[in-house]
Length: 115
Image (cartoon, rainbow, N blue to C red; front, top):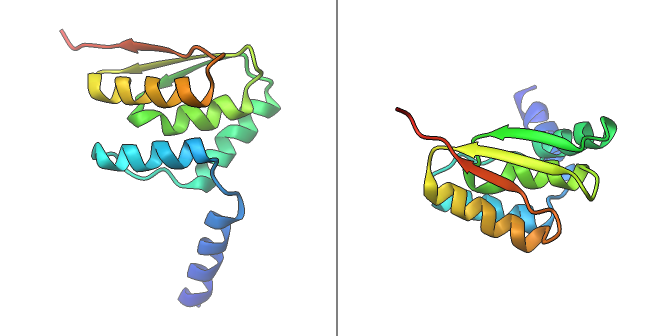
């Protein structure tokens, strides 16, 4: 039974492939010490953004931009994604990847510092 469950899980994770931009963000996120974000969760975010016809989304924690890219893929072309992250290196990584993947989207990435 456990083997069947693992086979099903593996199939589900590979069913919706990540775009090249998301794959690059995933690799960069892992290099920065982030946790891998599964394609099944990302495709769910993309579907939710598309179903809601989201034009404004706030993301807490950039983690190199993986989730943000999935969201942008589901949002309208003039959508605004605002990301808040306290780690400057992750902010820079997210901005660079998003600028390459969605040059017209101009995502808003803001620093958040503890006082």
